[in-house]
Amino acid sequence: MILSVCPNPSIDCTIELDSLNVGMLNRIDNKVETYSGKAMNVAIGVARLGEACITTGFMFENHRRMFEHVLDKEGVSHDFVINPGNARVNYKIIDKKSMLTEINDRGEEVSPEKQDELIEKIKELSAGADIAVMSGSLPKGVKPEFYGRALRAIPDNVKVIVDAEKSNMLAAIDSREIFMAKPNVTELETFSGMKVNDRNDMAKAAYKYIEKGVKYVLVSMGADGAVLTDGKDNYYCKSASVAVNSTVGAGDSMIAAACVGLIHGVPMPELLRRSVAAGTAAVTTSGTNLFYKDKYNEIYSRVFAERF
Image: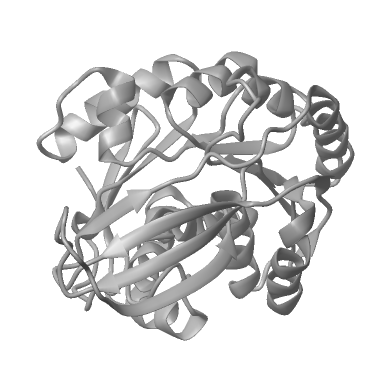
């Protein structure tokens, strides 16, 4: 079973425009609202690939029913810590060139008592998990150290995957052994302090995670594919050529496929291949919609991992 911890759920409002004209009137071509969060997206992706998953995290009373409805429809179990108030709203503006502009809300503040409640819930739910994923930002009132507290509550035999910005990632790494980190190129450069230009640079920068005890690093490179390394073996997989509708949720989809691959014990090149297939399939859907199984299968047959 896979546990996903979503500390900061969001209502994602994806707005499609012909072009974004700053300081001028803009007219919307299309608007889609979805109820999600990075780790929640992972849980949905896992379910679409046929594996059992439960998601937890902070939830907000005024919008909880809509989030729960989405998860119920996807077959994802859920057990949240309920807070008063509203879920945050993130705006994702996409123009005809598929350029993405994001405006993220911080949302309601979470009390120390609710933070303690979530730690206890993570401890309870992770007892039966094989893999635990924690990803995304933290709500107002919650410090980076919460990542460490949450992950220390998970048994040592559970493989932990983290996708988070530098401060939260460092708190996670300091707390326990991290099985896999999933940075994008910008996060990789920020964490390592290195400028990367090619896959060899990415492998070297990824070693900065491994030096701190992370076992595997999966680097998402957008349309260029992804790199997976354990500090000894490096693999690269190029994305298939597809029509891009939205890149939102691609990284979460990669983690979902990686989780399922780990459950089945696949080797590194196969793990990377599955991850790239899911991430690529995700960009073909509009808004923050994730990949669908049929598209994943189609792209999986077209991508291959190679050692470098």
